[in-house]
Length: 415
Image (tube, rainbow, N blue to C red; front, side, top):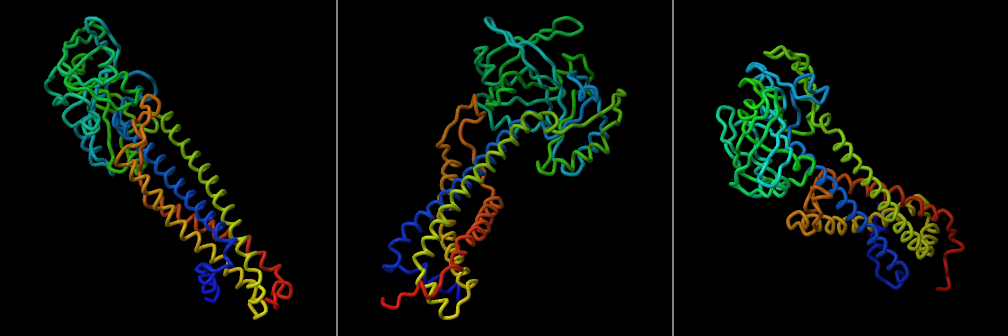
């Protein structure tokens, strides 16, 4: 195309005619590149933060859970006794990676000088311990079981610091029930730290059978069945299956079962994470606005600098549309160069933070010890595509000036 050819010649021209426009083009390129880099970094940080917090919330529980209907509707923790047929059915449900039984109870940990109320979570051998392994600070995880108690517990660093506990220390636990106060002596096998204060302040892990005995339950009775899925984004499909095949079913004790997802169990946390998307959109709007202003300003300067050339082209029979397309292509060449620079800067800074953790945060405030990064290739490509599309649309505006250029006034025959 003639317009593309002329645009390339203008873009590659380094003669005296570009003394005014060259700084403007550099500023436009820098503005676009910095804006794109900021957008890439912003999206990567928000996605990384949301992923990390979501993984921590899921790590303490699961993607979905089946419990007593009364427990789902209220604050009580009533047991259920799911049959093996029901467990096998859930295990074969679409999208399910694994299921794990658990039991909860409240108790008090006491040392010679301190005491603290905590929640005990009993888990069995099928429990997915990857999350705890990733967040262990000291010690090891005991072999959790539903057959025999090891009298070992895993506590958080917050609990350990409050009670001055270390790995290997013995600690007494007191449980209040219908039969009075029950006492157990545990050994601290490990200490974890997730920086998710809501859970770190109160949750202790031990064997499933130990909590069943403390609650006075039979071996098949549990607080619920946790369900982990392979793809978090496909959780809705699994939830719908549970609604059809599990909800309103009756267990071996005659209790009505009900399921709920992690979104329903922790609505405040996920609502807070969704609010972060608003910040990203605001950053997008500001960065695109700044980049577009610099681009339009730079292109206007180029057009004004090339008034004589526009007059010659019109005198030779060129139509306004062709000349306008020429300057749009010229602007897109600038955008293309800015995209390369912006992607290099944005991705380089993201990778630097991802693999070095250079920027640290206060975990008590942000729940993570460093800025989290998640590079989502489709999202980054979408940002680039949207930037090119918006640029092409915006660049049409300054080219409207071409229509007002008159050949008789712009051409200088004495030069």
